[in-house]
Structures are given as C-alpha cells and as structure tokens.
Length: 138
View 1 (cartoon, rainbow, N blue to C red):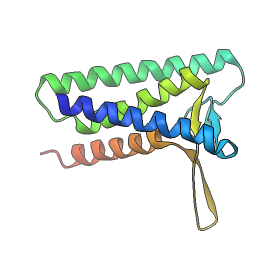
View 2: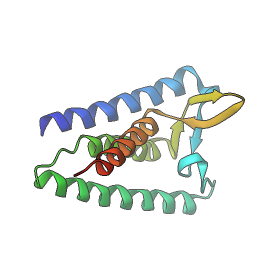
View 3: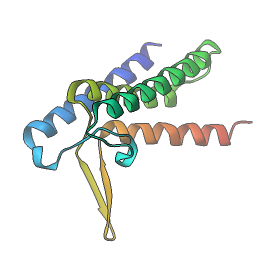
View 4: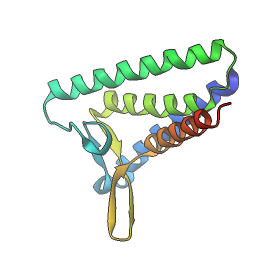
C-alpha cells in the first residue's frame, strides 16, 4: 500500500513541479488547455470549463472506486495508480491555473502532436498497461 502512495505522490509532485517550471522558464511554449485531450471542448466560458472539469472529476472518482475494488480483492493496481496520479495532477492543475498546463511539444515527419504534459504521458502509459494486462488475462 505504501508503494502505491509513493508512486501516486511522485507522479503528482513531478507533474506539478514541471508545470510550474515551464510557466516560470518557458512561458512562450506553454498552453493552458481548458478542455480535455487535444483541447476538445476548450472554451473561454467559465460555465463550459467547470462543466467539463466536473465531468472529469466524476470520471476520476468512478475510476478511483474501481481501483479500490481491485485493491480490496488484493489485485495489483500499479497501472491504475499511475492513471489516477496523472488524472489528479491534471485536476489540480485545473484548480490552480484555470486549465491544464501543457508544455511538451512532439513532432515527427512533419506532424506536430498537440502539446502535452507529464500527467498526460503517465495516463497514456497506465491505460496502455491496463489494456495489455486485460488482453493477456487468463
């Protein structure tokens, strides 16, 4: 249990520190995303922002409930903790900065991927891990 707490806290801390460093030292490369992935539902309207944020919170709480159920059944929840760490970091960013701070740009072969952050990366890795685990489950 303590290992999961350390993992969750590390993801949360690293993400929040890197977001703050990006805001301090590279503000021209930062984007505040008030929507969800790839800036879907991005809006300057506070009503839409808080509606989207509330839906994200509901999803995170439901996923946390699912994760607790797995923990009670003594199942390994490392992947779920990774997803929750990233999701909570982005939720906290919404509260602190009125949007998710994105600052990592990736491009390849002339294609520019939308800006992202550490939390986004760990969420994707955690979801990928869950998908692999469930596919190979006996």
